[in-house]
Image 1 (spheres, rainbow over the protein chains, first blue to last red):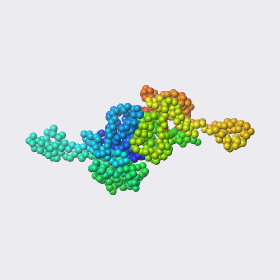
Image 2: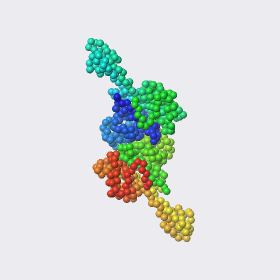
Image 3: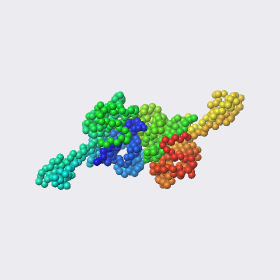
Length: 304
Length: 304
């Protein structure tokens, strides 16, 4: 079965602590490796999670606050020093390339591999990567600076062919792939055998949404309706709602309401402010709105 | 007694490993805190060594390779988020300010504290910081890009007054400070009592030199003659001398020869290439040239 696995590399907010690195996640989507955000220290977090740096194919940057992209110059340089030749593509807000390459180019390293930047926008949801078996979209979030979330979505899988029934109808081999793609079978005499008789439903396509940083923004639900797993920031508890509003961050209650509106299956919350020692109240405040909620931690693996 | 203490935060070279971070050191010089180099992750290394980030007064950057300065944007931002108001001054090669501030300013944080950059040069040795009890110099090293070392030097200490002898001569109280500064005592009748009778030698001033990255460069000895402790990079073993020459790095034998030429008391070697698992040969190759040599490790504390 194709893998769809998220490894949380950093679940903290801007101020790094001994327990929580700032934001980064690695998504293994059918063996394509996508890094979502890249805070300072991300290259070390990858190592600590025994993930080879060279596996990374794409890097997606949500916004230009330091705790979401300051690890890029170091990662780019290390990939070079380790002899990478495979290209890498980085998606992020306008200005990212200039800031990051200002750091990389002053080190006078001529990169050995092709590095390409693609700008994201915050006007509407947009397809940014399409592979044969999955799609990745950016979509607007609501923060102090232009910020996008990212949606990782499997394409509908092929239908499961039932060979025992196919044999009964004498279906020739060269028809099978068309049937898996959903076509009815029409024999030489023009008789139609409905596809739903010949196939079983495949596993439904899975999806994962990465939503950080953002204020409470119900419009998110229109971009990622029915998502399987949503990672949503929850920087604050309700007692600090004022601070959340000022800084355009969310409470765990906000995150739970978004998960509910999205009709999500599971909610993972993270990006906790360093001011809290005990995170249990984050769950308690979220559960009345959305019960299937867990706290992110560094090294957590989510099988979507 | 005034402290003069060096904490090695990172003793590795460009590619970070699980055991060794890239270059950074914190020097506590009479309770002024100076960070020498600031690789990615330095802010976390400070925490891991239980050093409050806000203690840092000065940051000195040797050169513009990523493994010596990529931690600056993150550290600068975190100091801001933690509410710093005390100024900070960063010394480093031309171009440092533009690259680093390109990262900081795009995050749209208006720093709450004064941040000042001062450019270093590689023409000659230069006094860059002078306090009442110590001085700090930059001096040229020999690397692929403009690089300086830094010399931390206590000023000569006051002479130790011998009150029992002073009493015999009936020396008035207001003379004592002058005598500590080395003056002879002259009484009201014009009789001179030699200072060396009235005082004992103080502890000699101590010094520490930070030399990384550099090829073998004997001229270093003219900049830091008689230094107490020298930290010198030793990226390679003799078997990789060719690679050392190409990349303008040193072998541990080179480092030992420099320590010998400097007439140093102690040599600390670091910046080991990640290719070596066993570092014992670094000591074996150095000792024939300079016996008092130790391997740096992350978290090492050197009392100068």
